Image (tube, rainbow, N blue to C red; front, top):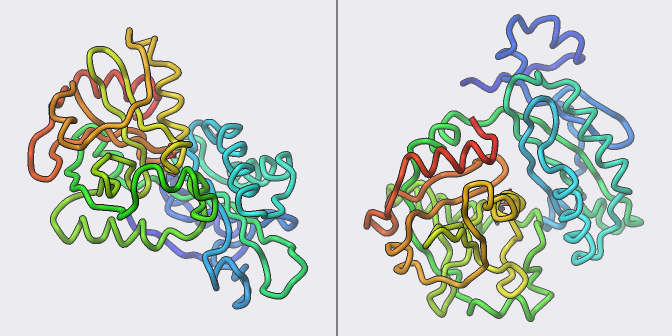
Length: 305
Ligand code: PLP
């Protein structure tokens, strides 16, 4: 799918778009205090701390039926990230309205990824944050992986599992703009022929993936890794899934797990708002238990295509 970077007003772009797909091939951009703008409009200054230091926070949500799924949960997590970063986040209602403005320009029948970004604003400025929202299409690869699963390799994060929970300056649990290590981890995995990484602590415990949460099923209990104790991001998708596990006849729990123990489960998945769910088919080259039927039930519970 080509991403068309058209300029012009939104009305001009809409008039030129002949199909829903044309509209979805464009990115929608909305700036707080301004509204929806042409997607190629420059909106960050060269001295914005979000660019200079990765100093800011964000959320990524799943757009379905024209709405951001789990919007309240994402805004609550963003407020937590802002508190941890001592960042002056605008009121929740303004953020929700900004997301709504962006989504109003997106075809409701097309799945989207909604990003809500808040940078610390100008270096040496008075603390006025820069806030914008974007909507873009969900990649075909991510959608296919919900059915086919993915190949994952482990990589050490170099820290004991409990260090971030006790070290607030490491910003555990905050979704900051500093994702260079996350993206480098995924590039490293892809260079090794895998789709993604499962980060492991220095003491050999599974943590999370660079943009996803680990969940696994064992003896009819759906597990994930405890977030506050480990400093991983508390995934909204995994939380929702565990809270609704009863609908599939399962209980839910949080636990630490060694990657090698995932071979003795009924399946392991990476979950995130845009990815939805992807079964880990192999981990470090060894096949993990996989059931297409179980994956389909989980996918349906989450409401992903
Ligand atoms: N862990 C990290 C580091 C992430 O970046 C994400 C995605 O944003 C997740 C987990 C999954 O979180 P969610 O399910 O809220 O999208």
